[in-house]
Length: 140
Image (cartoon, rainbow, N blue to C red; front, side):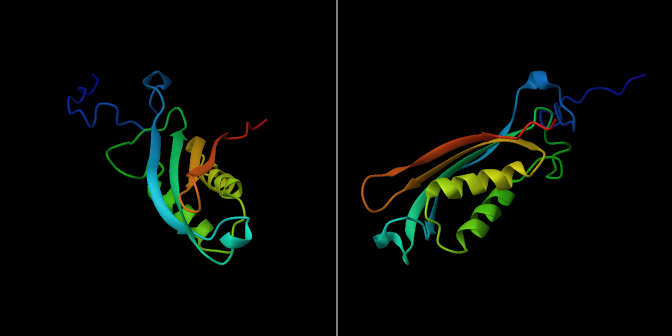
């Protein structure tokens, strides 16, 4: 005899190994504005400037929340902590470098398969920036 299926919407797909047919989930941070010591030009050195970050972390195909807890899925707090760590150190010349470092940190989590990082400089002229999309390297 099999256990009855839950009719509660939160538990309907609460499995640690969900079928790929359900699609892929994404956790994200959108339009987060921080002060950052970044820029290659002389007028950008020694001062902070506002940058806006939007980060999408695409989960591995079978990763889903299980039993309504945080243990089975990556947390956007981990991404926020990584950005804070990366931007609290020395001066960063290029926003491309920062975007690559964020992707590298995120993809170190085996439950994240791909990341899209968009960073925009909001000061010193028109809004400008970079967007990258990186996937986990294929293991042979």
